[in-house]
Length: 254
Image (cartoon, rainbow, N blue to C red):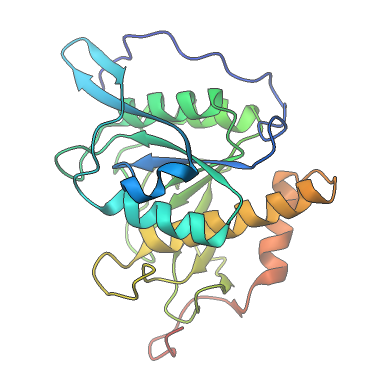
């Protein structure tokens, strides 16, 4: 059974309000293991979400012990040079978390007025607490980008309605996008971290690249004085796609 959150939910923007409207820089939420100290200048806010006997509590963010979140934060920061990060720690000693922790992190990030949230994680069960948090985020105008496997059983939050299902695509170079349109994923992107290593490569990294690309697009729209709806983001991703359809065996790496 999922633990209930013990603290009140943060105040969310009004339904339909553009969560990116305030402030000069587009804010990107990252739900993961934290960020490296070298990225501190790009981080607008950070908090940890810890599961205790009485539910989930929010604490000050702790040190990044796993490296997973740091790799993703580096990718987003590189793809969107003017974006700010809001980091929610839900992984601590290992890459394991609960739907209640992720839900609390999403609510907090929406209150931080992020434009989109990167969720390079996947839970096997469609827990109501997480589905409801995703619905609240979307109602507030926040885009949700979640990692999805290229094949196999669905994971959550990627499989919830309205969540952008992102994965890695070996065909894509660093700044390329693929429009997959499969039963598993909507879009793909470069599969490797910034150092080019195979370690840590996969759907999580592809999702972070796509979140970074979207953040850059939102920043460009803001600079031009234009709003960018969820539909506009979807159409932009389709227009930018270098590849269409699923990756085939033997496809050249990007």
